[in-house]
Length: 82
Length: 82
Length: 146
Length: 146
Image (cartoon, rainbow over all chains, first blue to last red; front, side, top):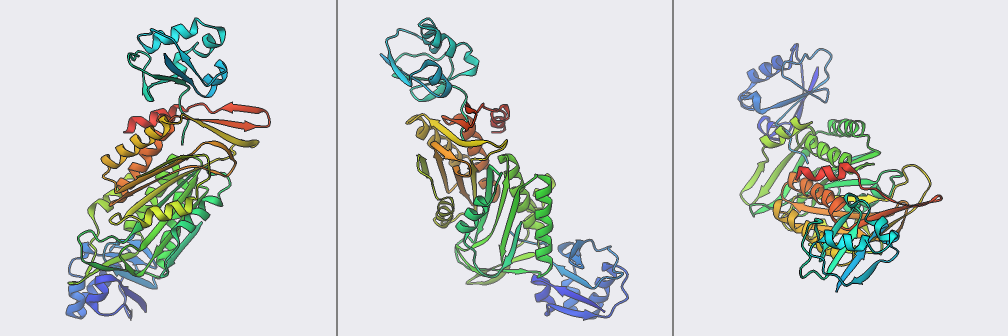
């Protein structure tokens, strides 16, 4: 089981801020593909991953990052702090 | 008549903060030469003009600047504000 | 080092004064403050979402980097989240160093990283609705300087 | 624009807060503060001499240039003279702009010019006597950036 979090418009498009996901995904991209296959709102949120950023266990990383041992994956648009 | 002002160690070396000077000097350098000829303390203060800065009527300028119409000339070391 | 992520307003003047006063050896203090501004007219509020847990870790990591790289005596980051009105202060950073160049560079570095690497997302609320602020290419480009 | 050359201490926090609060459109505020520091140990006080009349004019000219060049909404310069104890604030600048890059650059420009072009001279008082602070080549070199 893995916690998957969504922020900003990704959260709005998917409709929930977080969920527990049962997955055997090896990389972030595998997880994205599983989510895309679920429902249209996921497919819409993940339509263009170049518009997204991902953090695994609260560390920014790439979509090719491995998920072994990961407890928390978060998807969000480019950050706009400051 | 022209007011001549001295600041920082130039003031200390010459011993006064300002004085009125009767001069026909055409440029700042002419004035420096007149002052140097007065007394040792002036010669000492103006020994190395690369260590000095000059302002004519409160505007930073060079030693070749003309003095026609000038009312106030100030000599001082490089500034150390901030 | 002081890192705060908070809903509540902060007192910029007091924070700046205290930060400057507490430094024993630093001759140079730089602060930056970001304020909600209504550039095009019609902005009612700014909403800032963040990623609790990661935000604090990311800010601490950024500030640690700045302290090490510019030999800072200290650094401060305060960033608000939640709903902010026009004119309210969003965030501030402060840096303390012996020399002004280090204090300035470290503050700019903190800001550049905060803009694009700390998990905050801004949304502008106008009379026409709400819109997520898009990341600007120049903010991403600013990181190449470091 | 606020330019002050004064013997009296100033309240950095209050000045910074007021400067930031009064800006209607600026999203970015940068401040710099210089503090008397005792780098080598033994410093008793710092004495700052200036050129009354020229000082105010030079600071105003420098601030005018910064406002024009970086389209600042406002700029502030406060510089003390007279005798200052270790830990006292010597001076501050503040800049207000729409974007952080302008606010930062303008503040650095103000500081670089203040260091080498405003008629102030510092003297350090230690137990061994008093010594005029020598201008640093790197401060003169900093001006070439602008």
